[in-house]
Image 1: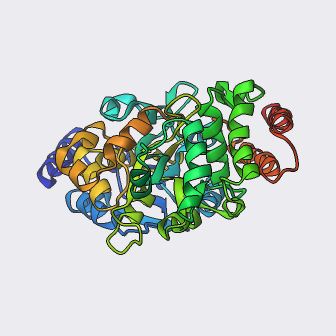
Image 2: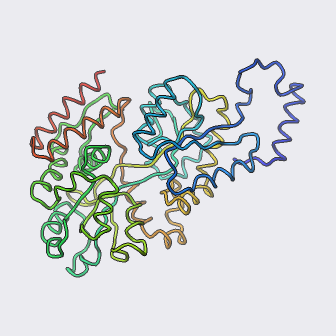
Image 3: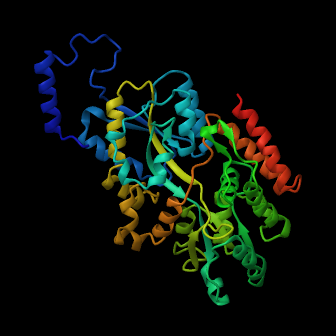
Length: 422
């Protein structure tokens, strides 16, 4: 999808021959007829600084379509707030939006992002589940850029001393968290259980792993009132009640839980792959002692929630063709390789997960690939922010003993039905 300067000059000559002048007859303020020109890419803060060099590569070969990077806050909630404020205003300050995967449905339903042609992007080269996060009402509204799946990190040195394999089922996880962890002065298991987006993810993974669901038909149908959902929520509730999930885990987000594991305080941790990288770094107290496997479920491997982000085009952009071409560039194989090696972010290109050189450098890739292939998106809804808030509030009440799992699931069904009816 790249264009050389020579090709660009050839295109300009052709346009001039056909029209007499590229801008002849254009009214002031109208987008160029070919939809090309400078674009702005809005994203949450780039913590590793990898994105600037990638965009320099584009700018060197596309001088007439230069991209300007706008970094919004690191917090996903703050980034979403700034993006939605801009989009509601009807302006086109941002041309390309790097959005959390669970925002795609909301942004598409609101008419803020434009549908894209599937033919322009190598969707068959992506890990299959990630494409579903980029669609709404059967149409492609974004292109997967990076992906993610939750993993179970574990202390392989401790399990080796006990002669135990990493757990594949909830029963094995509970047994080891309850009996093995205390012998080594460790807490058993933690995830991200503070009432924020991370709790929605942990709750959804528990429900999905038990074979349940939360919403269907892109938010129009509530499906959470089931025995599977009760079983999933009760897995977390029982852990806190019995103590193999420490009460302090109710205050954990990603970083707090990573730090607890990395400091040597946990036997098991549910987190994203970045936590494995951090805990395995040479200066980590548990370096060389960390393993990673797919999340367990009731009878075998469970189901992770898909994380990551998608690239979408503002419905009001003046340069839609350049915006789409930039997305094709950022999802090309060479650039996706750099997304992993420079940014330590999981790419969407399937071939990179079996590249021997990359697997040697990032040994968790095969496990992550298995997790992504078995993963499911968060509940799709045009009102996702409200859905997530309800899940957080209800599940947190259950974790703190204010209601039992059965009552929590019934309450979830009622409150989600009220949102779906709006």
